[in-house]
Length: 176
Image 1 (cartoon, one colour):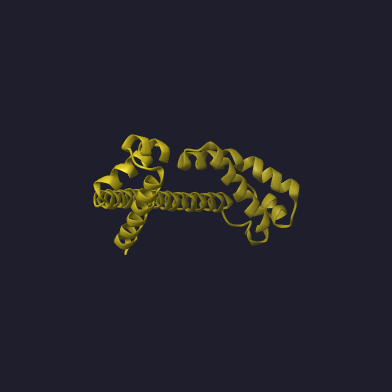
Image 2 (image 1 turned 60 degrees about the vertical axis):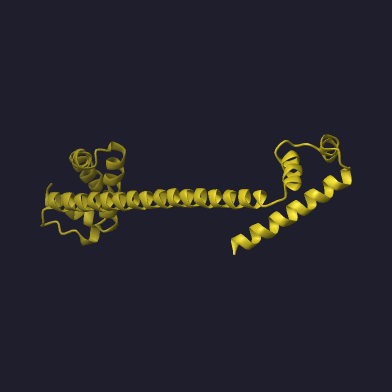
């Protein structure tokens, strides 16, 4: 690329910049693709570098090797991009690891709560436990339980109220 075109670019000549872009686009794109292995991202980087060159055209020295300058800019941009991708991947891995740990902890906590509940249910009297299981596990109504056990509907209600109260107290105490 001759100094004359670079001098015109530095002065803000858009036609000269278009010539510069046309001259270097293909080799710059090939270079980026060889490093990134991603054509779309390479295209984005080439465009971004040329935009930066246009924005900083006043800093370009037409007497220096523009080819070297352009490819150094591209290389640095690609390396920065790869570092960012690596950092993003590491952050994603840490996030998924934390999520897995939380799921495991929640599972362990749920298992502990179920054990506490089972212990609390087992501590109930036989009659209360039976009334509670018929209601909760089998979904039987107060009337159905009363008929099945040959007790009053009111007794069923009282047994369930007391069973739930005792369970709540034991589970609240165990949570402390």
